[in-house]
Length: 96
Image (cartoon, rainbow, N blue to C red; front, side):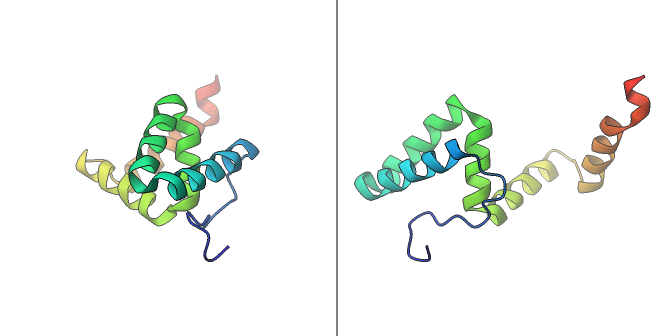
């Protein structure tokens, strides 16, 4: 898969439907280039943001992490703030 366009780096979170979409993205890239792929990615993001996120994370995990980290920092949210919020949401006391 080394020479495959849009190489999947981390497939651990992908569903069967995601693989079908990745194969579609590969075809779009081969047939219409980066501009066509950008339109296809935007359309999926509008239609199914979670699926789009899973696929982008599988293809470009480091880039997605950096983008999320930068966006959170621009809003004044640190990694520790986010971890604290997650712990609070997972707290058993919250269920009572």
